[in-house]
Image (cartoon, rainbow, N blue to C red; front, side, top):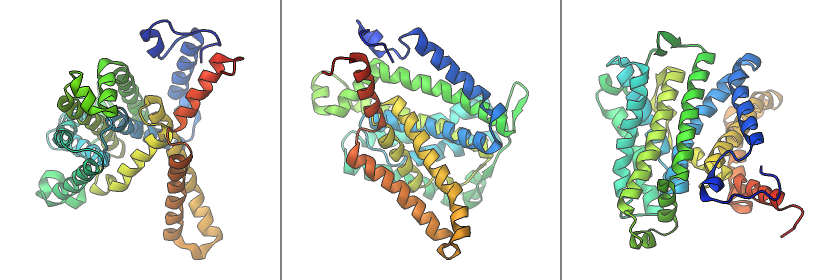
Length: 350
């Protein structure tokens, strides 16, 4: 945070991520800590962190689509699945290298998302949400009903580990570093989009698309572009997931996953790239904590059973979301921004 009494004198300074030397040092130390994590952490912790990185890429796309542009999307898991299946097919059947299959999977997901982006031109709100749910249903329908030799049907697709310059990312640590580098690139791109003219156009259409059109903004293009970018991020995340588990199946991309992606941007804060990352961390840590406590709870109270404990975990996590919607609908980033403003204005209370 900036010391009290230091303020930006231009829009570029106000939007910059790094304002002081201390902030640059803190960011550098954080990046070093991420790269050093596999050397000091357990295998389980590395696996959880890898899952967080993949989820962060997908949720960033949803944040751009829903948080910045205001286009309700309850089918992000379907776009992620399209990216995962496209990457798996290109890698396993066409034998494309990793560095081609991964971005190509993102492109296929973006094209699939563009179809629903065009539908968003004439509908909004509840009806748009229903349209994106249709994306989830269509994705499952195509995978299960197309010839099995194409997408594997209910059996899924197995693929070889990612390989780059002769090095295979087949260990947990190798996949972690792969996901970390790709996630850093995608995060930097998300910040760039949010701070560019496209980000400001997204926000204008989100706040009032009619007024935006009267100001000369191409609302049709903007809404379609929001779905295109959001689905591309989901496709890249799906491709990373395919190389992480090296097996793609239809039950990995369900409607409940899309709902959890929405929960992450609600908890972190709608419209904030940093908020999306915070939401991923908070929700995933809560899920991991409850999952870890489940077996111990069943062992102590056997009559509960696994299904009841699983339902209790979903109820508890759902309560977290409801609590944020009721008491802090702007998410954790809103509280963080208030704390920053108070720090910068200290000791003046106003």
